Image 1 (cartoon, helix red, strand yellow):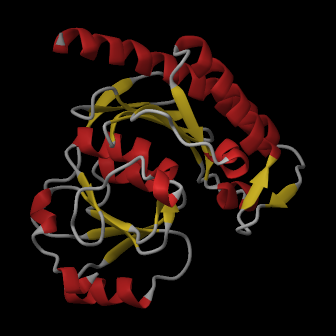
Image 2 (image 1 turned 90 degrees about the vertical axis):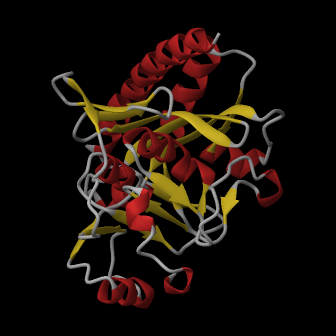
Length: 272
């Protein structure tokens, strides 16, 4: 039974990769043109690329998995309709819209499947580089490059934290304090779920976010990170859970992602 589920997830993941590539192609057409920017109620930007990517993904997933609920950022922002079961797709059709608007290439497409409050598979497509990261089971993770070469990826197994990932912009006072206390010398700035990809392929040791974000921002990256050997926690070091319908899928307090649990032991809750 377990083997059959694994095979089915691999088949589904391959189809989701194809769907992400189809959406990425359309996103790039818009990216390389003049486009308008609108702003939602929370003042976050949205473009026609967000909307068209979502339309493509929703339509294609509905064909291959009819009847399975889909929670997607733009649709949820207008409808506020929660998943009816604990088995559903969680999608950000264009993660990093600010980076898309700034044209710095650091945006992704995030597709995850959640079951019993955990992401069980994830696909992240990076349209500009034509790289795709995926995990079909949250036990192994892979990267497909722009020549369709596939390789398994692994997180760092360093016993020290040398490199931290952070969003675009200057590090916060909390991040500076952590870097000083743990003698972390290197910081990689980048946008979107691309940070999960870099952590998963061994290019950094920890990724900390103190700001709120939504579950569709993290689910695909969480599955890929876990498959590559890493872990994700809330800032109290509790397991990171999904399907928080009572909070509108909002992660209110941020999170911390580790390349390995050896790194976790170096942190104190008071540091965060």
